[in-house]
Image (cartoon, rainbow, N blue to C red; front, side, top):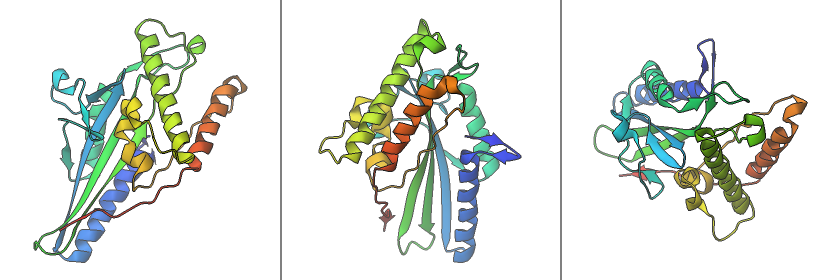
Length: 241
């Protein structure tokens, strides 16, 4: 997701693109428009929402979700790519990562990185525009017999698999245009409701292994990608006067 300085990942590229857009918008408006960028980082761990930017462990733990938004989490303003990189580094250091038989550094929860982009008119006239970009790093599904998960690792794996199963179920119901979509069956789909079924554009990047020993996992990932590809969304504009 982050990549390396010489080979940046999708998160770093997205941040760079947004700051370039900020410069272009402000330059073309000749001071009439200001662009504000802010970020938030959440982790869904054992079906609890944790704020990775909270000042203390108490402030970071088990946030409530209301109207598809986390309540009481920290949002940090950022003025440069470098500042966002520092914020991301802090958040990454606070993620829950453990070793399993399958992965020496296995993420034990899903990461939600949100960038808010707001365009304001400095003269108080006209229309303000705003939007946000979610970059989501999903924890991988686990086959317990392969990962060797026991104790807390087993509990984490069960929560990961359940939330991914709910995500797949939501995608399937969106694809078939069902009247009821079970967003609230997991914190992941609850927080991503607007991205999955709202006025947005959504892309999924699937990671598959070329090794035959991972054939079943890769096949499941590709089938999930096929479901996602069949969902139709219509992006809209967000304005305020």
